[in-house]
Amino acid sequence: MMEHRWHRRVPIEIPVSLHFTDGAFGPGIAWNICQGGLFVHTSMRAPCNGCLDVRLTVTSAHGPCSVRLPALVVHRNKDGIGLMFRGLDEQAENAVSQLLLAHGQTTGAPITLGDRSSATLSRDQAES
Image (cartoon, rainbow, N blue to C red; front, side, top):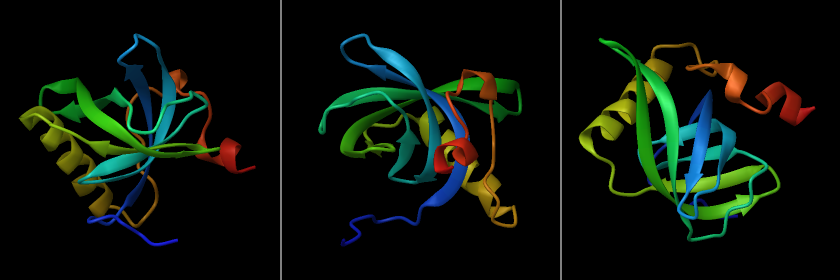
């Protein structure tokens, strides 16, 4: 399968909530991220080319901050959905940059941010 990404993906493990345009919402776990999008492990069904908002919490200089990342579903499989960011505002762009920078300062282990209690399962649970 040919890769079509412009940016290198960074492994992460962050609980997120998915908010669809029809009002449906539910939990997921972001497994990787790049400047152009992310992959979210979720049991929710999402149509390809559908729009949604990914919401997550990052820590800023002022404490925890909720961030909205508008995205488009570009692919889906049994593990979850691949999303491409669309129209990120400055706060969202800064949050993505912060996540990428935080990972760059580690030794390659996934980073975890936010409250894991809202996530349905961890990467270890999903891969077993």
